[in-house]
Image 1 (spheres, helix red, strand yellow):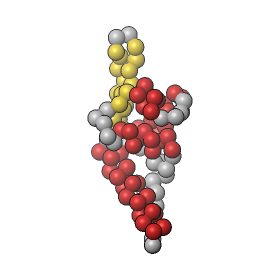
Image 2 (cartoon, one colour):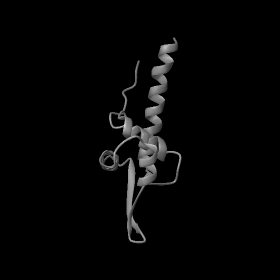
Image 3 (cartoon, rainbow, N blue to C red):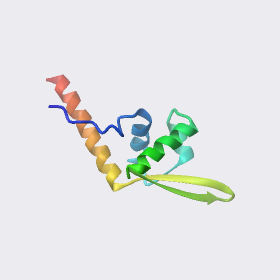
Image 4 (cartoon, rainbow, N blue to C red):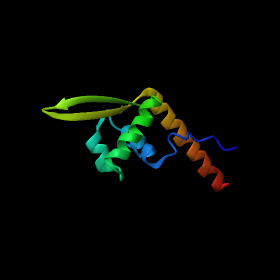
Length: 97
């Protein structure tokens, strides 16, 4: 009846990261931090979890003398996100019945 929800995406911060990344080519760490209500440490930790799962790719470089971390969603991550959203929609459809 109910589809199993991806536990990796069923976290508020990880879901927020994926929701932002699904709509852009890539995003800087600072932009994600501005748009998600969390700390630098927690954002970094949650990005690491998504990276371990292969849902996001992380590129580290420098802009001038400053470190620059850029994230982008992978195909695996986009598929997982779309499946998660479809599963959640099924939950809401059951409520309306």
